[in-house]
Image 1: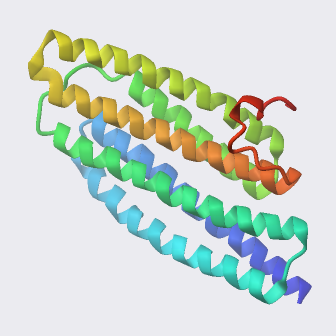
Image 2 (image 1 turned 90 degrees about the horizontal axis):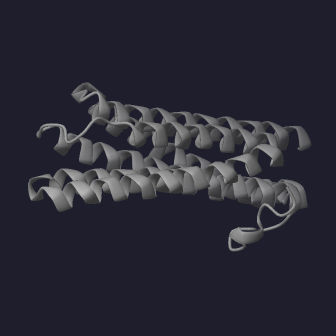
Length: 224
């Protein structure tokens, strides 16, 4: 029975890693569609969304079954609960990539507003946060999780910077409003990706230390 549980635990980790890799690829494809004006990347995002949604159902069912059949002890129980929460974060994170793709699809019908500098860099950091937060979760690595929390502040700063820049475009020329507003919303989508990665990192701290730090943002790094 114990060996069977360990095998299921490993399968659960592999499913989460696959789901995370899909979401990470979706972010890259959505940003490529936007920045490189690559229409071919758009359907890839939608196809992978369907795979993510199917995996979410599989992972939820696995978590419920493992708890019901094995009644795991505290540490493993926290991991399974954390996996269920991480599963939800990954699905929502993938939705943000779809939102970026939707806006990119519309922006491709209009001339570019400005060269892309901040948005691709934001997306790069957010993708790295996702990759590292999931790696930290499956390996129960609190140190990497805390590093993800720090990087979230940089994504927030960049979102604020580009919002100010795009507001200036809109104030100067009303013809840019629709395009600039779409880019503001894309920056917000990327910020939300960073937030979901941060939540996954916080799940790791919950699993390893048994502490829920979600609503104690000011103190979450205190023990770093």
